[in-house]
Image 1 (cartoon, rainbow, N blue to C red):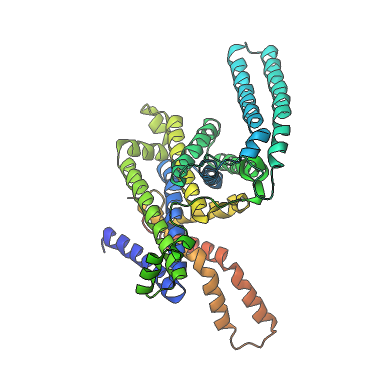
Image 2: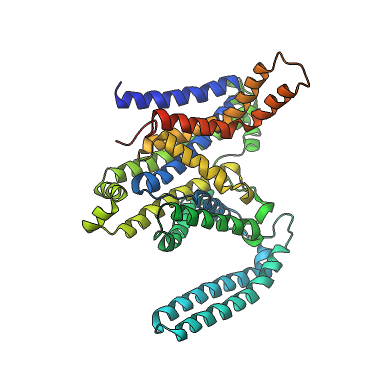
Length: 434
């Protein structure tokens, strides 16, 4: 069997599994798996570019995904006039003061001669700047968060089309990645992993606690859609007539219509990113990145700026994750900072890349679809399996209760089992790097 035929067969198997879910459960479930699989595939490509191209071990994926979600709020939500009037300008002024403090400290570090004078000067700038910054920020934040906190309590956004938020999410994540990379990319291996994980936790902690920015754990709901709303379709006589011709109720038809529209949009984005990633991989730049990954010392001896190239790929991969984060928030219709759990979902994305085949973009896409399908379907299938196994046991039996209760924990067990099987029988992934 040729590699091309094998790859087509693997993607075909995943497609058949999704169709089986549609037939046995519902097509709503199948389309939800498809849409989340498309987003997961985009995230996997971003991580694959960092790890598969350059060997960068980034465990801060969820931080960049969260920034993409924040972009959906900042771009597409309408502004809250009362909040802006209460303290919006004060918050902007405080942020500018904070930036000026950091810039002043950096300027002092460059201009002042080394020694005690420079250390004291930088310390004085930071301390004075911090207290001035807090003196301006705190009352403004309190005023904004007091504006109808049950519904608002934040500044809102720019009220632009939500599709604009997708590239903005990528740019926001890319900017954060550049700032992080300028300091953290001097580290290697597990040190880089620890640094990126810590920074991701900081980003998510900010989103959870700065209500004026993202409403914190109260969540931002009602994020605009790039597609029609189900209720509008159900009130459209022409759509209701078409739904009847399809043999569907208006509710079912509208739900399927919206999910199919999302799937088309996500597919277009995935195809564009996959095409760009493949062009980059097969270009001289891509060959240089793989050479750096395989032997940094030899690449440096050939005159390559390893740190600069690492920064490039770190920014590009993070931007793709930010784009996927904006798409995910748009699909959900809400920003929920409490759901961004770095260890849990970062692990899931890494399983997708490793199972699919690190260094191969098509492998990353396959891993995204396959692992997400398993993540969704393992729990109901596990429950059914335990029902079958315990069918002959007496009700109230400790063993039956234990087995039925264990079905809820099948997801992580299955992820670990799949990862072990792939590493044992196909160590380089289902579609390995050539």
